[in-house]
Image (cartoon, rainbow, N blue to C red; front, side, top):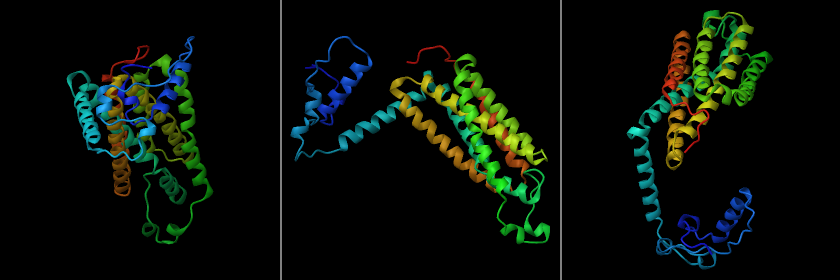
Length: 294
């Protein structure tokens, strides 16, 4: 019997499941001593909150509001801690990086099939935008794109794979922060070049480079977010960072679509500038390579 055990382990009344988890932890630690836990003792706090063993749960009803209130209080406290002096700079810098990376990547990447289709119809670069009225005929607007468009889109999508593999081998040798910064800056440079190339193979090549390089930034960002935040606020930080990234992705997709027909150079420069700015901002983060997380 474990006296004074953490009430969260059995608060839901799942004592058998809690013991099973403890057995797994015991086995993972390869402890030479046999596992002897047969039951869990509820603390006074846990008993007063209404927790029961599974065989006593039938017919029991209790209000969920205390737990909901406690959850929101913990969330508010964790959020406040993220903006206190010790973590404020890290939180703000990572918010900027998440927004700019998601805005730039999804703003451009989701539009690649449409941009390849325009190259297939009209030739030239992404920014040689024409409409059916410009060519004197609307028939081309109703034509299906050639198979090469789908092949090019496939190549651009699969270009993430080399970047993922490369990240595995260089993350410890180069470091998280240098890879994140260089990835975002080089991604921004590749987007800038897309507006000026004229050959079809050049467009495909730079688009693949963009996919391969930018995915390294996403990988390093995930690692840094895990290492830079303490355990007790890490889940809250992840939720906040993911939320701002989703907002950036939505805005990037919408704004790019609105501006691409006005002047293609404008969204290209916007994406390139934001990616570069986010990459340079990452230099303000602490370097966690070789350090233990806490």
